Length: 30
Image (cartoon, rainbow, N blue to C red; front, side, top):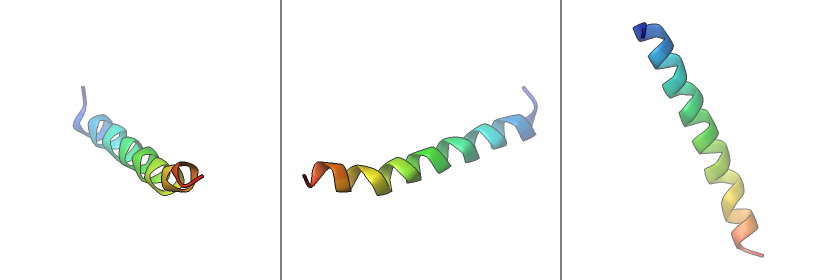
């Protein structure tokens, strides 16, 4: 697997993780 592809997957994964981390607390506070 090309390094660029691996880095792209990591960036996407981090972006999704950050989105979930920001949205999840609001849902758990209910």
